[in-house]
Image (cartoon, rainbow over all chains, first blue to last red; front, side, top):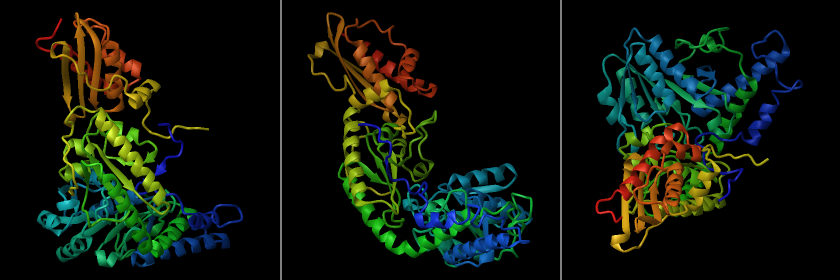
Length: 401
Length: 131
C-alpha cells in the first residue's frame, strides 16, 4: 500500500467542504468591490449594504429552523453556541435553580461546558442513553428535579448518527417549566429541523457541517431579544448584547446560503445517502464479526458506525489510511481509552476501540463506496490473520446496540 | 508535492514491518523442539505470541502473532527476526528502550513494547524448555 496524498473522504460528519454555490455568495462579500464593509457602520451605504446581507442570511437560517429572525444569534460555531446556551442560560436563571440534565453521549462542547458549570457550583446529571443510544423521555424524566433549570440533549449523535427523541423531551421540559437546549449541529440537511416541533428554547447550529464555512454558527433563542442570556463575550453590544464582536459578513452569508440549499435538497439527499450507506454496510458486514453501533432504524442517512472483532483500532486506522474516516480509538493518546459514546452504549473496550465512523455526504459516490468496501475487507482480513489465534473471539453476524 | 496526509506518523521501519510483517505466522515443529509463550490481553489493546524452534540450545526459527498498534506489530516482527541464531538463555540483547528508539516510537508506547519483551521471555522461559 502507498500513502495516497488524497484519501477518499468519508468524514462528512466531522466537516464538509464549502459548496461551490455557497462559495460564490461568500466571495461577493470579500473584495474591495464587494460587500466588505462593517455591517455595524450604519452611517454609510456600504455598511448598510453589508447589514442587509447579514439580515437576509439571518432570515434564511431562521426560515430553515422555523424561527423568527430576531431569535437567531450569530456565533463562531456550534461550540460557542453550546457554551452560550448552557452557561448563558444557567447563569441568567441561577436564581431559579442550579441543576442541569444532559446525556453521557453529548458532544464534548456540551459535556465540558457542563463540567465547567459544576466547578462554579451547579449540579449536573449525566443520563445514560436508552437502547440503541437513543436518548428519550424515559431517560430524562427521572433525572429532573425541582431545581432543574436546563436540559441539554443533542438532536443527532455525531458518532453513531442516532436521532434522539427531542420532541417528546421538549414537551416534557415545557410541562415542567425547564429550558430545553438542543445541539443540532449534526441535524441540518440530514432531517427537517423545526424549533417548534422539537420544543427547543435554545438550539445550536454550525455552518461547516452543512457545506458552509467554518468559523460561523448560530444560536436560536426562543423569544429573543425579549428573552435573554448572560453573554460570554462583551464589547460593542452586537446581537442584542448577547454576543459582541464585528459580524463576519462573508461567513454569515455563507451559512445562510448553505442552510437554504441543505434544507431544499434534504429529502432527496437523504434518500441517496441512505442507499449508499446500505451498500457500504452490506459490503462490510460480509466479513463477519462486524457490529453496527447505534440504532439500526432511528438514525440519519449518512452515518455508519461499525466495530470489528479481532482488530486493534490504531492499526485498523493506519491500514485504512487511503480513507479519510474517524475512529473510536484514542490513537495518539497515552491511554487506550476508547470512544466514550460507544462505552456509554455498553460496548466493551476492544469493540469500542476498533470502531470506525463512515460518514457520507454530498459528493460521495457509489464508486467511492465500492473502493472503501474492497479496502476494508482486505485490511481487516489481513490484520485478523496477523493476530493471535482467537483474538477477539469472532462471533459472526449482525448485532445492533 | 506528495505530502503525507495520514495523521498517524510512523517511521519507515514501522511502516515496512506493518505492511509486510516478516516472521509472522506459526511454526510446525516437533513438540520437543518447540517453545511458545505470550503476554498481554486484547482487551488491554496488546497481545503478542511467539513460537520458537530450538535445536542444540539455539533458536533456529522464531515466529510471532500480534494484536496491537503498528509499533507492536513492528516490534514483534523485529524481535522474532533478531532472536534467530541466539542461544535460548540469551535475552539481554532485548532492551525495550533501544527498541523504542529503533522504531522511533513515542514515549507512551513503551508500555506496549514491554509486552513484546514479556512475550519473548515467556516463550524462551517456558517450562520444560529444550536446551
